[in-house]
Amino acid sequence: MFGRSKTTNDQLEQEAVAAREGAKNRPTPRRRDQEAARKRPLVVTDRKQARQTDRAKRREAMAKTRTAMMTGDESGLPPRDKGPVRRYIREYVDARRNLAEFMLPVMLIVLALSFLRTSAILLAVTVLTYGILLTAIGDTFLMWRRLRARLTEKFGEEAARTRGNGMYAAMRAFQLRRSRMPRVQVKRGEFPS
Image (cartoon, rainbow, N blue to C red; front, side):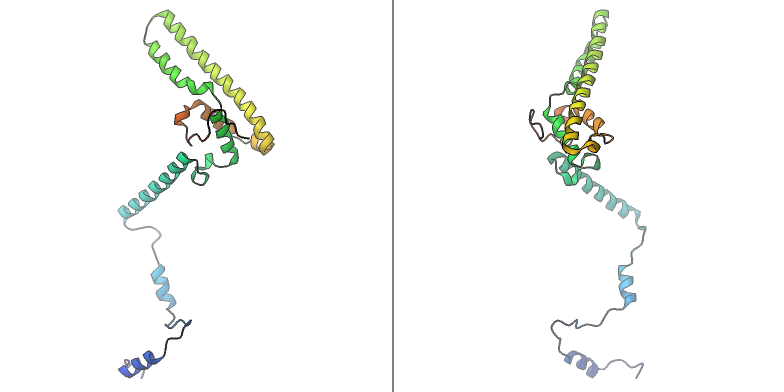
């Protein structure tokens, strides 16, 4: 009785029970079996496989972020670029002609001129270097003051005083327009409202 195996009659009896619609029609699985099926180690024992999986996940996340940086999609941007305030700053800086963005090409000319070792040229190079640097810093400072007033008007005092917004605007202004990330979404003169 306790130790006997099922005979064909017992098996036929179980099969004879008609499957009811909407019913489970199977025995409830044991808890022990379900837990064993779900069990996975906390630390993967195959380090090579874990490294490949991690690398694939990282590549996928970087590809998503890169796509968002190219298209301006807010959901995939890194935290430093997210939010309406940062979008407004980007659009304002991109709509404006910044003197600072022309600093890199001028510095390349200055570098080429510095190889000429005459005192008049070296003096001109020094004056040109400091002149463009001070002009760019002054222009960026004035840009930030106007931008901060607009941020206060649109988003409130707290958004304009948030730490890092000024440096975010300045660093964007110093980059060449074509190399800015996230990519420029507005044309020159299309200031955000």
